[in-house]
Image 1 (cartoon, rainbow, N blue to C red):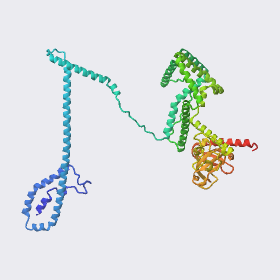
Image 2 (cartoon, rainbow, N blue to C red; image 1 turned 90 degrees about the vertical axis):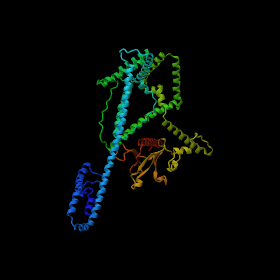
Image 3 (cartoon, helix red, strand yellow; image 1 turned 90 degrees about the horizontal axis):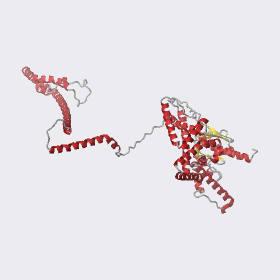
Length: 592
């Protein structure tokens, strides 16, 4: 029985041949060791199987009748050993199955590689056959010069046909290689749309772009400065020589070739300057601005000041460009008929003269007038401004052309004037009086658009007469916060709202009073203001501040209207209206 159990137990490897779980690496049951290690471990197993018959014979000879009793006593232990042996056998079978699965996978991969290799060999053989066929055809097309026996008539005709086909094919191939690239350019394709990525806002990139814009615009400003200096006779000798040369070229009809020659000359000088030559060809000496080295790290105040400077420059630049474009649009849209009429007549005269006069005479007239206008007439008009305002037609047309903003202000002032006249007539004449108001300019519409607040009618909110309305410059008011330093509670110390200026009053509508009473609103007479000046609420921030300080006799400390975006515009409007009302009061009461 013991021999049978030993056979069952040691059918696989012995336990001491396996790695101890504590000594083995941290692996799962599915992982396996190398093949080399497994082969070295299986060698002693085979030797033991060979020795088993010899051991059995020796144990049978030596075993006596007492061995059976010892086996019966150790029967529970043998059962446990048998279970352990079965487990080891199961683990080994699992390991063998995994090894066979891995080998099968590797063999399948090798088979796929072999198939691909066979396909590539077939392709190579086909290509070699095609190359050989092409070489044979080339040899047939270009036979050697050695004499050959005369062939029969049918073979000659077939060879000539093949020769013609090959010549035609070679000609097409040459034509495609020569002009195929240009033909491909005319192939219609859908247009590719590229989306440009916008860069994030950066103070360093902002300063760099501003400097680049100034450097790129500098040649244009220098050219305009030289033209102005030439027409204003900044250098008498230079202007005189330029005038004589221009008039001589215009007399002989060489004005256009002269300009082209000057363009070529300027490009040649620019080439020499780029090569390192020091050449200065300008009437007015160029002013070199000192280059500021770019700062690596900017503080918060410097960044804020930089943004304010750039915003101010951009505002002024966009305002000038908008004025020019609006004036041109209004000139062609007959907004000012008396000004557009002059342009209309001038275009008709130019059209008729271009149809009747020869081009040489017409070119001389235009060139001569342009030279006299540029060198003589403009110089006289710049020296005598009164003559320019009376006789310079282009200057008069351009200065008198209104912009859209000016047209809006004019319409507002005329509308308010007509409404005030109607109110005066209605109060003087009673109910029987009739006043004509322009279409679409009723009192409700005008009050709802220009003379009302978010709470209601303007005069009702501030308890003022109906004649008190906001000036056109502040028809929608200026958003700000009132800082009353005489008050101690936070709710009375700072109030957010909107500031208005009328003909006689300065009105502040508090945002917290729109749903309740109007006690928190502030009304100040312009004649009671003793001092008005620009104010900077926080001294830490750069710039001149965003507030206006107003002092009155009833307040111990001046009131401050801070956090105002359009502070300069509001200050100019309040200050001008204040001075106007003070002068009126002094004119009425000269003693005061």
